Length: 175
Image 1 (spheres, rainbow, N blue to C red):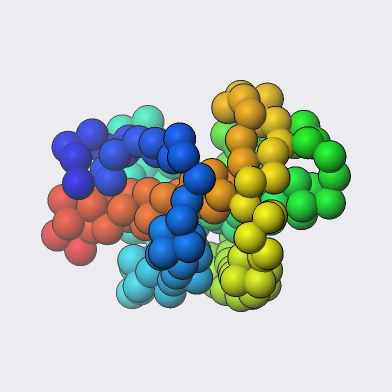
Image 2 (cartoon, rainbow, N blue to C red):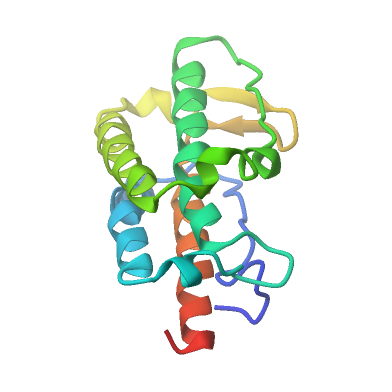
């Protein structure tokens, strides 16, 4: 944990070397557990609390909850592109603008349920990848050349990162 409200578990550091089988299993477990961790983080929060930014100038808890399936649906698609195309260049999206769309004010159960089902399917795929799939390359317009195992590490971190936004806010506010 850090004192930086933007990165309560620290910024993502991409693994330079390929992940070994044990590291992949740990990262897959983190992806698998992310929906339950998010549900626990927002349990019993009132609308006023859900509409509180996790930091000054940051998204509200509700927006963070809706951001996770938005982001992870994109990541799931990126994985499938990397697995089926020859070094694809994946597409980014305007996440800050997505967080301003009307569905970012929806009840959080919609996104909690979507994240549950998405992660079940995503975990199913991750667990069944053959060894030669982990090094498959793709290009990210902002991050540069990446491998499938780096995508897994990124999204294992991403879920924990946003859950920590909520849990550290709860701790600071005494919720």
